Image 1 (cartoon, rainbow, N blue to C red):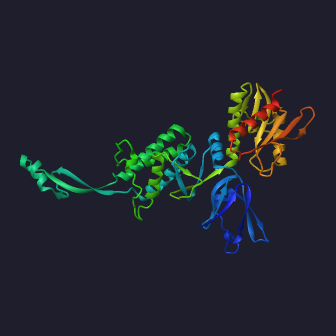
Image 2: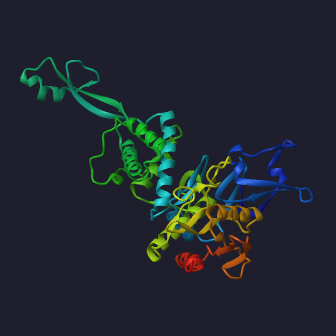
Image 3: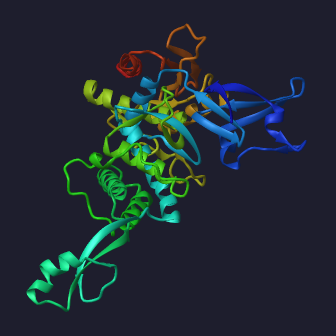
Length: 425
């Protein structure tokens, strides 16, 4: 498979022959049509794919994938994801290689569990690995190989001629590999029930797969990792066990996966990150926390939940809600509203939207918050203008530098800039 590297929110030129097959048919997976917008350059015989809000290795078809990289560090992305409360998403129809990381994070652990449960579907469809294990039984019906010496010593010498000791091979799933997987299923279920109760379907699947292992004895030792053998050869027929066992090992050892190293010893669903959603929630969470700790007289509301209101006044025929991303209030008065715009340049429609929200909220200050463009060297906060006379609405833009190694300081600067707009209001 050919992999083309690209930066998020940029154009990617792709030879049209890689995407158009049989002369006129567009060969693109239907599952990824929302990941790119497409344009055509006749002179260069190329298609332009615009990578928007997503990061990750995105397959276009069987022979081509685009590896969309962030414009800032993985460390800063991790901070944004953890702050936002969001997680990695998975392309369930496409797998890729990763390197394992000795350090686990909440971000990758949930992702690993989801991938692990999906891998279990292959085991459900193809069956549990079973081994022949030697067993001995005392029985009146001889099925297997008669153990004469044991029968004489334990039974016949004591007059129990109606019984015999029998050796036989039992075909059973009760082996170390399945015990290891069962431990991981139990651990993943504990994690999901403790921290992700909202993932009801995933929890149901986990319980279902765990019940498949009823014929496997639970591990009684102190460390289930003692069961793990990285050199197990499952052969061609049971090769699906390889990914399952590796996923189980990552879960039980509390390891993570790296997005930068390329040892390629882990093979899982390809992740992707919706940076637009993460950016929006990240801004809200850190602003709410900052104002709570530093300016408790003001409150920060989420326009999608506790802060939204009806867009029109009471008794209006029209319906709809006003839902800006961030609302800063003092008592019942709305001092400022802000919208997160994960784009390099805001548009008139963005300004129209926030101005209309300001009118609905009877609010004088509005801010559009975007990542700092690479070519922007000016002030972080700038006033675009104001609108109206009776209710003068002040419209600002703020550029937060997500590439700043000290992202915490960048967050504080933004929060204080918003506070300074309304502190005398």
